[in-house]
Structures are given as structure tokens and as C-alpha cells.
Amino acid sequence: MDAIAAINWQDRADRLQFRTQAFIDGAYVSAASGKSFDNISPRDGKVLTQVAECDAEDVNRAVAAARRTFESGVWRDQHPRARKAVLLKLARLMEEHADELALLETLDMGKPIRDSRSIDIPLSIRCVQYYAEAIDKLYDQVGPSGPDAMSLILREPLGVIGVVVPWNFPLMMAVWKVAPALATGNSVVLKPAEQSPLTAIRLGELAVEAGVPPGVLNVVPGFGETAGQAIGRHMDVDMLAFTGSTEVGKYFMRYSGESNLKRVSLECGGKTPHIIMPDAADLDKAAANAAGGIFFNQGEVCNAGSRLLVHESIKDEFLEKVIHHSRRWTPGDPLDPATTMGAMVDAKQHERVLSYIDKGKAEGASLRLGGAAARTDTGGYYIEPTLFDGVDSSMTIAREEIFGPVLSTLTFKTTEEAFKIANDTIYGLASAIWTRDISTAMKAARTIKAGSVWINCFDAGDITTPFGGFKQSGFGRDKSLHALEKYTDLKSVWIDLS
Ligand code: NAD
Image (cartoon, rainbow, N blue to C red; front, side, top):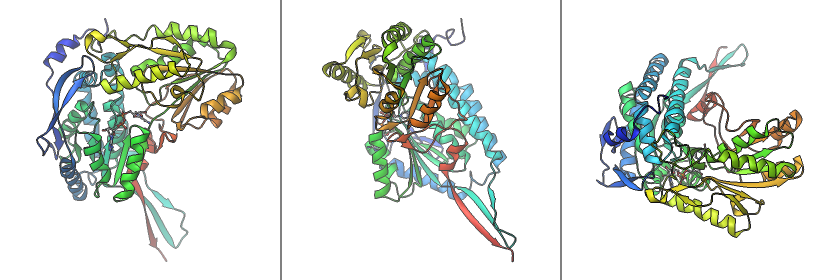
């Protein structure tokens, strides 16, 4: 029995204490209005706990704390070695609390505990470590200004960073932004999604325990239209880092334009094409990835391979293989370590995904697998892995981001047609192609308008590789040293030596 299977997660869940207040200026506080909202576990549709419902007033307090700490230099002016040590300690504390954080994630948003414990939390820890270790290895530049002058090109932190994130990888999406923002010396106000605030709330406390000065990282749980909008429109927030839907990403552009022109970085939706060429070396492996690429995390993945583009000569054979591999993806209790697929995050998302399945049927696609709610007796929000064949690019299920376990199969005759279909979308987050032909692979890498192109693999990469979108999937990159650029600005210093 492995370490994750050896734990009785239900027993741990029964004994779990929830932190549910906002974390502002180094302390847990209730919302100024005194309001709280129900935090419902998608696992069984039951109220898990009540969480502080922050709004503009709480955001004001959090921004004031962030501003004060930034201007005082209590964090940004610490020696880089000292800030590195603090963030490395935060990573160690996250490691010590990894079981608890994984459990919070699973109860909050319904993903399998095996995924939370072996993917979300370890990758979040690695992200914090990565940016911690970068802190004392970054250099500024000296310009080629000739003998009579010296020009220094300095990178400076921006100030107060607003971070607004979604619910699909709650802690990981948060630290992808919080870690580089803190590493570069900024102060942060983080708003987690209302569906999944628990790990972010805990992160604030762990950061202070690690030595991040109180007020440098503030966490304000609440709803998008109130707390999220208040951050987006705040006159004293210098930069807004957002991950979420394209629709809400556009709101943040508007908030910025109508307030203080704060910088905005957007990581938005996707409709990833997953292309299978007839010369793929291992169709079986490609089929396993096609299934995993859409059913992992219940399909609630921005880069989920939701459009399967298969060459017409191998389509029938390939779909049989995908259906075979889909058997390993079965909705189950998220607290059971054997479960591979959990619940949709909430009742609304459950309804939304089912309505897309209805649209697929109504518009003439042929349902080959699933297509219905599952485990309805639990009160939770489960959906069967679903596969459509006979989809064309004009259908709603080929155009809109479903954000659930629904795979649409399209066919093509030529490579050019495959690339054309791949690019026939408003999104450009990721793409994948399986082929033995190096020139087809490299043409795909050149032609497909997407931030990531995976060749003979799917959803591959690590913290060293930038991640983000083209087109309406957004702009700005998370992960890698490039992510540091958006939390800093260039300052030129020209020294006359004549
Ligand atoms: P969402 O856009 O509804 O919400 C994201 C965040 O924005 C939440 O914190 C929410 O409270 C807030 N928000 C909502 N309405 C707001 C408003 N009017 N003003 C201010 N803030 C508001 O997205 P979601 O449903 O939480 O997440 C799913 C989306 O996230 C999908 O589109 C997915 O593709 C995208 N996503 C993208 C990436 C990426 O890296 N590109 C990663 C994960 C998820």
C-alpha cells in the first residue's frame, strides 16, 4: 500500500479544523460587514463551513496593509538571501502541512485526494521553492553606453499586486502568482475563487509563520463581483494578475481602464486541439493521453484537450482505443485514494456541463460514451466521462470552453486542414500533435497559435517552462523566470562620467 492509500482520509476530514476568516495584516479577521457565505463541498453537496464574505471595505484594508508594508521596505529591502530563506521556509511549512492542504483542496473543490496530494500540493511547493531560489541569482544590467556614461537598467518591484484566481487548481494557481510577486519584493492581496478559498486562507498564515512580514500577503475570500471587482478597480493596486475565464479577464481590462491603468496579466480559457496523425508512433499511448487529457481533474483544466482532431483513416480504430482508456476514468468519492475522477466544483458547473452535452446531441454530434450525471445518490456533482464523435467546427461543443469531462472528436484529411481546424478558435492556450514526422511536428509548432505545443506528449512541462496563452487565452506568462518580469518594472539610471 502506498503512502496516500495508507491514510484514512475520511477520518482526517472528520477531524479537520477550517480557517475561514480573511487574513489581513497578519491576522485572521471577520469580514467588516460581518457576513459569511456557505462553503459547499461538491463531494456531497453539503455545507462544509462558512467563509468570511469580503467586499470593498475588506479589500481597502488589505490594500492599505499591502501598501504600508511595501512603502516601509520591510520586505522588499530585506537582503535577497533573507527573503530567499523566508520563502524556502514557507515551502517547508507547506510540505509539513501537505496532507492538510491536500485534504482542504479535495473537500473544497471535489478533486481526487490522490491528485491533490501527489500533484497540486507538491507542484505548489516546488513553485514556491523555485522562486525562492531565484531571488539571489537575478542580476540587473549595465547598458552599452560608451566611455562617457554608465547606464544601469534596474528591475524594481511594482508595489501592490492584486491576485484573482479560479477554483480548478486553487493553491497552485495562487502560488504561480504569489510566489514570483513576493520573490520580486512586492506586497500582495490575494482573492481565491468563492468555490475554493480554504487553501489560500491557510497560505496567508503559513507565510507569516515562515517570516513573511504581516501585511505583505493578505487573503480576502469573497465573490468576484464584489471583492474581485474592488481589487480590479482599486486606485492603489499597481498590477492585477488574473487566472480565470476570458469573459472575466475582459472585465479586468475594463476595470483597469476605468481606474488607475494598473497593469493586467491574464491567463484565461482554452479549447486545446489534440491532433493525432496517422503516422503516430504509438497510437495506444496517444489514446491514453487523449483520455487523460480531457478527463484528468474532471476536465476542469484550462488546457484540457477538449478537441480531438483525428486523421480520418484511423478515426474508428483510434476512438476504440480512447474508449478503452477512458475506463480508468470513473467518477468516485474524492476522498477514496483509488478515485481517478471527482466531482464538478458546484451545482452551477454541473448544470453547465450537462447543458453542453445536451447541445452536442441537439446539434447532431454522436454520443459514444457517457453523457449523464453520475453518483446522483451522493448529493454531489458528478458527471460521466463523455465522448462525442462526428463533431464539426461550427458546433457549440467545438467552439466554447466546456470545462468539464466532454471530448469532441473532429476528423481531417490533410495536415493543412488539421492546422486550420486547430486555429479555428478564439483561444490559443495549448495544443498537441502526435506524429513520427519531424517536419510535420515542427510545422505544427510554427503554425498553431498557442502558448504551448506538445509533441508526442500531452500537458508536459515543469516550473522552468513558461505557461500562458495567445489570442483570447490571455497574455503574460506564469512559471519560469519570465514570470518575474510582469511583477517588476525597468528603471534606467544614466550616470554622466565625462
Ligand atoms: P471565473 O472567471 O468565473 O473566476 C475566476 C476568478 O475571478 C474568481 O476568483 C472569481 O471570483 C473572479 N470573478 C468572477 N467574476 C468577477 C467579476 N465580475 N469581477 C472580478 N472578479 C470576478 O473563472 P472560474 O470559473 O473560476 O475558472 C474557470 C476558468 O479559468 C476557465 O475559463 C479556465 O480556462 C480558466 N483557467 C485558466 C488557466 C490558465 O492558466 N490560462 C488556468 C486555470 C483556469
